[in-house]
View: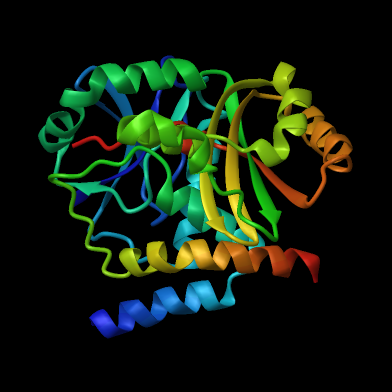
Length: 220
Length: 65
């Protein structure tokens, strides 16, 4: 039997935790000073639509049990608790910070659709040399100028933001917002009102989601 | 066995509606990523990653119908 991981959670955690995607009883595992919700499973789950939905449903349910839920990516299986501690220890500080960030929050996602990719005008930074062009590209990758008016309208509702550019029209970018629990309806109403004033792009909101996009980078 | 899992992934993506594609992106592409001693054992995950971006584009069309 192995440990299938669902989420890192903050304290306190109310019980019962319920069951996981294979019907297994969920348990709290303490490792590297962090609390992880896991289930004992005989094998790695197969990627099926049902398994994906059950994983998401399990993580969502945990939000009703604790204030802070940091989802772990689907398909993460470890041998046992010592293996979990070894995997988490090097990044424990970053994970604690992320848990503090998502506490009391949930995620909303915006997909930005348009016909033309917004490419970086490299001539504007040509004088700056390779380093400056690199930084300009990095900055561009974190921007969504097409929806700046919408982002301004949402400012009071958003605690944190991550932007991912795709540049594969019609999908131009995804914007992930962390909002306080209970604010998702106000968020959606604001998106609906402000989207009508955008030119040349269409915005498709979804959520609330567990804070999938606010996990720190790879835990190696 | 591998062929079977690949066809399963293709099946998910070919039959997915916009909401499932959103779910796949969040659940498979995001979240705390732990590598090293992880026994992923998910032969079809890479394939899902590869096709996801293109399919999210298609999701735009799906939501309009």
